[in-house]
Amino acid sequence: NCQTIEYKLTLDSNPQFTASVLVACARAAMKMKARGITGCQTIFDIAPVDLIATPREELIAHML
Image (cartoon, rainbow, N blue to C red):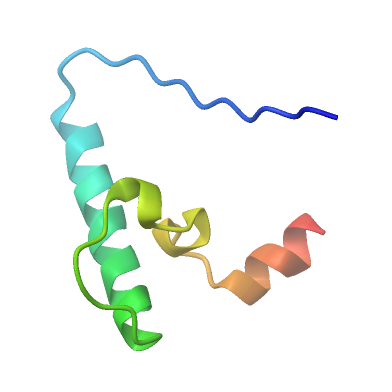
């Protein structure tokens, strides 16, 4: 069995999108620090749930 998840986004110059990405990364950094994760991380090291403002428990309750 082979599954693939593919994410694709095509943008022109978009300062609002850039700002949103920076805010999401700052939010993720705070969540990871609270769990004791420190040091250099790339965007690929960040769990998607850390980028979202909604608490994990609420996401699970509404999506499962």
